Length: 436
Image 1 (spheres, rainbow, N blue to C red):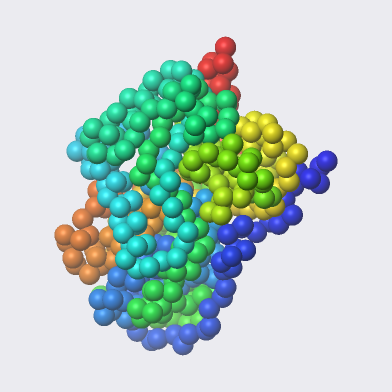
Image 2 (cartoon, helix red, strand yellow):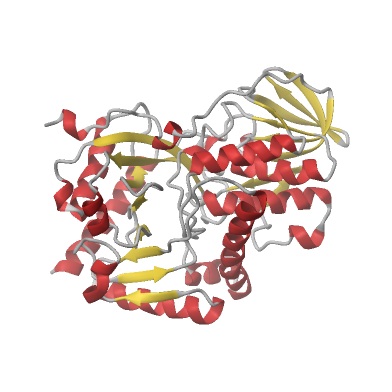
């Protein structure tokens, strides 16, 4: 029984159809206009814009391009912001809160238009998203949020009462929720592969398996030291997010890599998928450590993800935790095998807002907090226009001060297991109160 609960493969399901591959070695130029650190969604989106503007651009990735979060995520185009509207207003003012809320809509529309106009074959489907809540009080708050989204931003969002819930998801676990139709799903590894294809065709040079070891200012230029040698660049853009290392210590002290783990079931019978996922929507929860889940693009499996409190190795406990969560939602899947499980790093920081900022002449595009499918291409593109001096095209509510420094932290997230356990305790208390 124990063996049946652990997946056969510990690599992303997405790699089956779009495997991450090393690129051929490229000669290292002595001098470039721009050096980009990181060749995931952010770095490639920026590099594409810059290369098409005629700049000489070299992107460096310590792994194969996309091997990090870009091909390890759930492929949900939510563009969600973790702090709610009230929290953002309290911290940064109402004007900033309104701008951030509005920009989420623009960023999603930008992504969908980009996929369409560039002809990216990434299984994108605009199927909508259902958010499940665990208590009736939560439902009332969520219903009001749907009204605000509809009235303020013109988003097709509406409350789903408990009585109608099974039209959206085949479970009684929730007490209603909200549907919004501006969110969809894509195949993240295919999206990265297609983005890499068009970026290379536009003239971007990508150095795979080439770790940057340091960036130092040299007058009006930068010396970017890598494992393959040193290149001089007029400008530098850092796009490392959850895989930031000691090459950029300023950022490393501000971003916390947190594991996000995903499980995927074996293929399920069509009638089971039709019952559990009747509209094939993307799914999220309103809990502190809520799961996100969805049907795979072919509609044959269920993928479910959530935060992983482990820090080293690949222990079995987080996999079993997600499997129990899946069965709590869908008891009929008790005996279903998992085919894949894996994890990737997301970058968390103190205010949980994506960010463009500049420090000592280096521009950073980072801090997506688990919502990089939408935010990484958007922020990467805005950062590119910032470097080009295109003020109108660079305009974004996310271009402001760096994330705050985290005391007693220098890249080792020793405190995360305790924080995640605290969130889980809050969720258990909320679930108890909702059910009593």
